[in-house]
Length: 132
Image (spheres, rainbow, N blue to C red):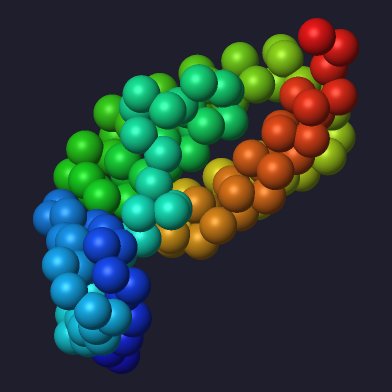
């Protein structure tokens, strides 16, 4: 089923391994085949992955974009998950990471990223409540 995207001026989107920028007015594109697609707002770069959950999100993003290298990313993912459980030993975190991991096992990395966004929000809330 084709995917229709509407891009704002100067908005970037990752399609496959290519980054496209809308250089003009609002535009619509239709993607006819199945490839990884992420809007700029849904991308966390390695440089911006400054928390444990952001690092997990970044690894899942790499699994999504580079499926041929997924086994290498699994190793990194599980190390980060272990580190996260040592940092946040919480049943809510466990439940969320189980949902994310299930989507990865199903090969549905886009849905894993969506589930991981909930974990990002949870982490941000926890970090906001840490006395500075």
